[in-house]
Length: 242
Image (cartoon, rainbow, N blue to C red; front, side):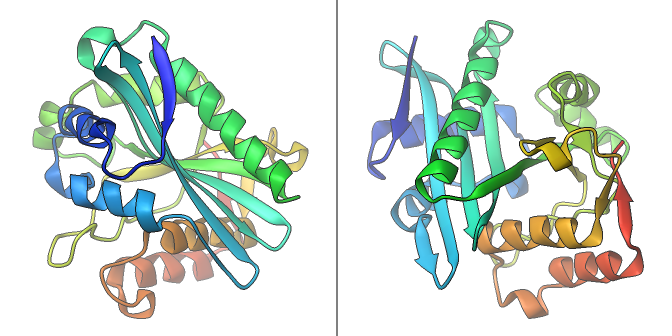
């Protein structure tokens, strides 16, 4: 098995990675298309003022076939940095063979490398996970794996679920937001380890990171999903990690 970091937008690995996403995430509103994946590789890494964003795509390849992959962002503002996972997918017949664990380890290594290169303090990584408590029976039936098993997969690896009503803004203009995802956090820094509650300030940074990296179809200040999350952030001081 070869693990490589994809840098060329026109690489065949991009389309093969998208095919994995189609299998792993059946909801078309919840996954990026090939054009967006290619655009991420072209434009997903940028710097503006004291903000730096880096987009990464890594894949597991068996001979010429991509059988697993992960896409994610590194985002820093000043000396503080966060990671944001977009997708992790492994072809069904190759699951439970260690590919997912290897991709997660590589993601951690790349984010840590970015932080060292940019002299930043990497606080943690946030991912979005399908939440069986928020999914309809039809959404659960269509899912590529039991969502409760997916929850256990992440919790066994030290990820904590945030008690926050996360709403993923539409990926494309004219599509609905995704309301069955929950945020999970993995701590890198000592002050986030064994944390039972995340402060409003830290969670605001996480949401800001997400919006800056992935964007919204229109201006964020008019996006209903983003405005709804900002309203909940203003409603309380701390948010429990479950």
